[in-house]
Amino acid sequence: MKKSGAWLVRFALEQVGVKYTFGIPGVHTTEIYDELDKSDLIQPVLVTHEGGAAFMADAISRTSDHIGTLLIVPAAGVTHAASGIGEAFLDGIPMLIISGGIHTQSGKTYQLHEMDQHALLAPITKKTFKVETHEQIIPAIYEAFTIANQGEPGPVFVEIPVNLQLFPGEVSETPAFVPASADDPLDIDAIAQAAELLYKAKSPGLFLGWGAVDASEESINIAEFLGAAVATTLQGLSSFPASSPLHTGMGIGPAAVPAAENAFKNCDCLLAVGNRFGEIATASYGVNPPKNLIHVDINPEVFNANYPAAISIEGDARVVLAKLFKCLKSLGASKPVNARLITAIKTDKKAYLDEWMEHDSGDRVNPARFFTELRAQLDDDAIVVADDGNHTFLTAELMPIYRARGFISPTDFNCMGYCTPAVTAAKLVNPDKQVVGIIGDGAFLMTCMETLTAASLGVGGIYFVFSDGELSQISQAQEIPYNRKTCTILHDIELKGVAMATGCEFISIEDDTGCAGAIKRALSLAEQHKPVIVDVKIDYSKRSRFTKGIVKTNLGRFSMGNKARFIGRALLRRVL
Ligand SMILES: Cc1ncc(C[n+]2csc(CCOP(=O)(O)OP(=O)(O)O)c2C)c(N)n1
Ligand SMILES: [Mg+2]
Image 1: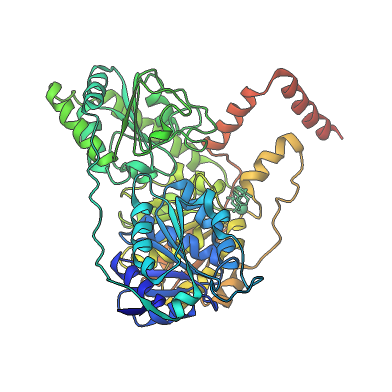
Image 2: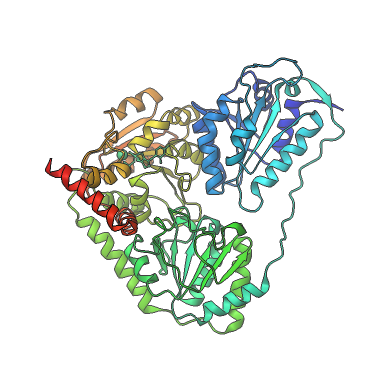
């Protein structure tokens, strides 16, 4: 039979369950866009910048069962999208990237958008495909989808030359997509050994990353059985419900919240799941896991990369933890409820919150008061999205998250600009859930035009912009050593103007007394499908535990000579 390439792309994307594509059409993709216009299953979404499109696709994957998909022009669209593709790659998020490709049979070079996209994308994708015939289109998209979801997930790129899209070509079949069954063998011996170590431990603990996000139930079973404290990484914040009495918070080292720092001080057996001990997760490698480290991950490359493991178990977190729980139960009765630990966690959490609540924020908004009010008004299954900056760590430390995938943020690629498009997309694909973004004012400047996309689609996301006028996570680090803030004081902007320009509602929160009413109004407007930009005049005069912790860890690593040089310069600048 004869089919156009564009038809084949649509067929394959529908088969793998794509619901939205994000991008901006060009001459190399209009044929596919036109084809998607006919689809009952896929909605192509016009964005304002392909960088936003990539963050949107990422958020679709993180908050739904659909794979986030880009449909972009070659070269210029791909380079714009590269930031979001990189984020998805380092954070282990599945993504399909479909781009047009230059004409392969014109016999001409120096074509519009001609470049080696595969070389550019190789380091930030799991694999790239360039299809050469009509026959290859469906299999390439199926394989791309499979690879994107297999093992540690990530982005996969498929280039479809424009001439294939436009014209019909011969294909022998148009097979339905059949998902590959992934029944990888488990290392049962290692799991049994791990169970014994955990069962024997005096003070076992769980440290969960994003890789454990779909294994909450299994983690809860194990933690309750052992009476073990549970901490999460930043990306894994939603992997364990903050409502559990065993939940301590983010981190396990000196940069962790106090409940976690204290609960893990004497940890003698650590079960780390879906957490590769990266720089953010360990607060600059400031953690010190016990000798009995049991490391579970789907990607074996992470084992022993930064910290030696006593036992490494490769596999899907849900499957491994279910088996581990069975092994634990076979060893004996569950441990008695650890009342001392539970009381200590509760006391530490309250003391840390009190410390924040008592902090004098002057006539600005106290972060703890804002988050406490937001949590009180949000549904348990609301989705909270953060960008990258000081606001991220404040959210992680002060905003309890109750449901798996109820918190997302750009983590290891650490790309600012993520939040605004991600809120738009998360709300688009989760219309029945509340979706709120916590966005630094610097990050908002990067991608705030994706609020226009939300307004045009009638998507009621809420964008809480933490306005401190600075690139704070960086300016805080300049304050002491440099005694000046080069290029981190933001140019003045009237956010109300952005709201006016994009058709969003606008609310301002000037001080603590404004929080309750403003949040209530924002939620009610969002329920009426209106996106809302909320300008929060935040007070950043108190540092997060994370920031204080990494500063200490890094300074501690400096040689005496370098320490003296840095301190000397800081003192000199203060005197001069
Ligand atoms: C694309 C990109 N550029 C620069 C940085 C470096 N960076 C990390 S945090 C940060 C400050 C963010 O400022 P803002 O968005 O205002 O958030 P705040 O820290 O003030 O809460 C910067 C510049 C980055 N992570 N990503
Ligand atoms: Mg800022």
